[in-house]
Length: 344
Image 1 (cartoon, rainbow, N blue to C red):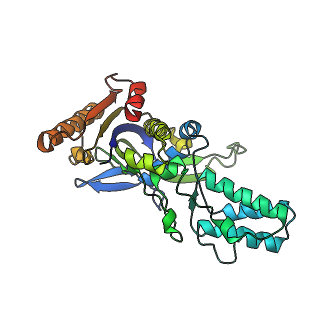
Image 2: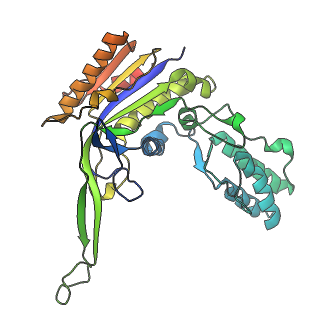
Image 3: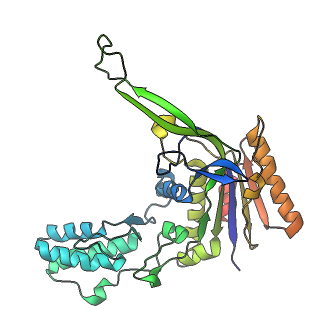
């Protein structure tokens, strides 16, 4: 039976455009018959993974998502004095172990998530080939690993279509963040003035634009299968605990970077409830099928979330063995204790 850690997070953002669609408008979704603001799980995971907080905490254990590994390997070989044709061929031989290559290129077609161990091995092999001025042997190309996995790969998974035996099942599931209330996306009409325009001949603007924005209190849900995470990390329980702490801190403190220079919409979570246990996980998003209304949305949302948690417990039995929450609105709880709780 797996040991699950669930995080239920409420974060309020002022006017912002954190995550945009193909038209440049804030992403939305229908829920409970009302329009809601949305931040995609892909956006959330990306910003947590590359944040200074996460990178500082997990330095040396974070993978690289790239198509460009073959280009880096080619440069290593060229610097070793290998002829351009051979450098391209040998770099391709190594790079294609991580995914199908583009036609007549050393670039991988799709982003490959490569662990530090795998990247170091690929670079080391390129250096060795350059020094010995020879093509790689078949056995040397077996660079993919299922052990010594980077924490972000262990958490969020990896799919390699060409070598499925090295796929990693994600130990962490992240829901799209959704506003707990209905919203209307507003339009921000803006102008820019030419600094060298003295206004004597032309007092108009040099640029006119328009962008969408909205403010929202978001509910976010994260489910971590700690048993699978430890397994993905080769049984390293200490590293798993450290990665859960780092993810929890990033999820509660790191804001998506969309339009931050325009809105400075950075925020910490106002409320976090962490749950631990072997029970089947469940989101508490149903608490917000009916949009939160009123002048004190944060308190109403917290009350609705806790009531939904209690109702699940009443009907299904205890849905967690233990819980810990922090409530910034009421000034209750400690983030240090929350961090300790999720990692123990």
